[in-house]
Image (cartoon, rainbow, N blue to C red):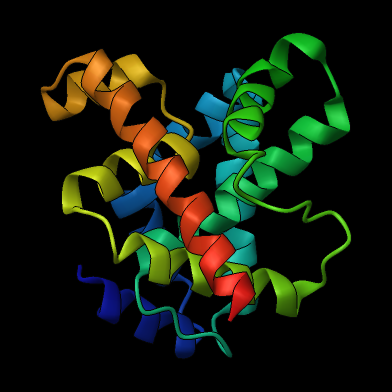
Amino acid sequence: MEDNQIIELFFQRDETALTHTRERYGSRLQALAFRILGNREDAEECENDTYWRAWNSIPPQRPQFLAAYLAKICRNLALHLLEKSNADKRTAIVIELTSELSECLPDHRSQDETDEREWGERMSRFLQTVSQENRTIFIRRYFLSESVSVIAQTLHISESKVKSSLFRTRKKLRDYLSKEESL
């Protein structure tokens, strides 16, 4: 079933929307949560909570890209659960990703939802300025929390190419945000 059909089922409050969503995106959502949490049971909990959040937010939201919408919900749930558990061994990947981007992005802890949406729009505008390959690498690393080796293997490129792409893209992001701030 196509995404627009699934979204229509959500708008009709038809519970089969959840079944179709699980069939289409369940394994991807669970894999995303697992990469962040490193625990299968917690990943399953995040996957299920993602469906619940989607059910409660569609409508009124009408996501343009259902996969990205669900991934954002799942990622945020996993990060929240990780923060709540506060286990050092589990936070290693988040600390690594945060430190990689820390020079580019401001501290979001005090920002409200409007600011978060604005940052998302700024990030989307920036990502449109880089090549498709660099955009894919950046999103897989910082949004899907994939390791450099997994990205390289998936895209059939070397790890050094992934690392250099990420380094250059972070530099471009820093420059882009600096220019945007000065406007």
